[in-house]
Amino acid sequence: MKGKKGMVLAVLLAVFLSGAFAQAAEPIKVGAILSVTGPASFLGGPEARTLEMLVAETNKKGGVMGRQVQLIIKDSGASPEKAFSFAKQLIDEEKVFAIIGPSTSGETMKIKAVAEAGKTILLSCAAAEAIVNPVAKWVFKTPQKDSDAVIKIFQQMKKMKISRIGVLSGNDGFGNAGKGQIEKLAPEHGITIAANEVYDAKASDLTAEVTKIKAANVQALINWSVVPAQAIVIKNARQIGLTIPIFQSHGFGNIKYVDAAGAAAEGVMFPAGRLLVADVLPKGHPQKQLLLDYKKNYMSFCSGEECSTFGGHAYDAYTILIKAIQNAKSTDKEAVRTAIENLKGFVGTGGIFNFSPTDHNGLNVDAFEMLTVKNGKFAIL
Image (cartoon, rainbow, N blue to C red):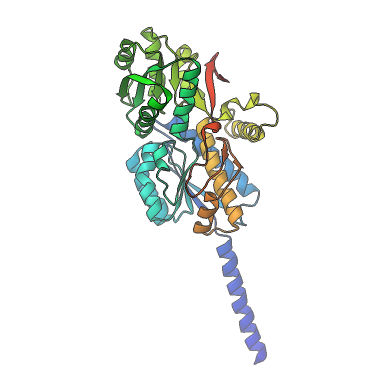
């Protein structure tokens, strides 16, 4: 009798252990909503490829917390409506642990409430400050803040004794957010906005808009956009003989925009993270080795394609998530969310992150370098 009881207990124990092992071995599902195609593919394409590379590396090393990572990418095509639908699907149906993205600010603002309601970590790859200001419990972002980008530009303008400017901005979420920060911060930096025009982010000719800037007799132009139209602004401005300095936002950090603008891009200035100039950073810079490794690995993974600032935003989002899981020693969502919120001194492509309960971006103006286009390449100004 005792033998039969022992056999039953052994079978039950084996079943329990096999079930526990199966549960432990379940993958960690990470969703990603990215503009892989469409007008913001310059953003979403590098982000998607970066995530694919990183997940492959993680799984090759045995995963995280003994579990493989399953990446589920949804291509939003930069549509806030699609992003909203995908966010619901990823949370309600796929039961993802976290979402990386979206690529654009308008999409991210559309799904903030979805992430909050679903108590799902959202690590946005978009830049608008409104994404994290005011703070939402489950929402973080990795690109540097709009306000810090504007301040960096105004600091450079002060060095160049520029005080009267024209502003052009796209009519998308990123453009609207940047326009608001420029208008808000200009007075305290001694800047007068003499012309302020908004253009269609899908426009193919912006001659009328740059002509208005030229007529305002300004000393410089800020063009705030993250879509291909920003290259059209530069080309049209030079075509009408506008020779003043042109400043771009941190949304200019893809060499494809330079290629699209051609010779007209020469001398354009913009704030950006240090990924684009990693090779010339001083020896011992805390970001240098990470940036060089990412560039090398990305080019190898993507058959020679140059990496961009935007892929870097996805790199930071993913590595922050993995580091938080490791720090929390858990895959409990609340524990990992708290670990992100308390992450300090984390070296990423966009800067050195120091999150807090009141700062879900973790970067400041020092995360930026002022760059310029020189001989068709990016260089430190």
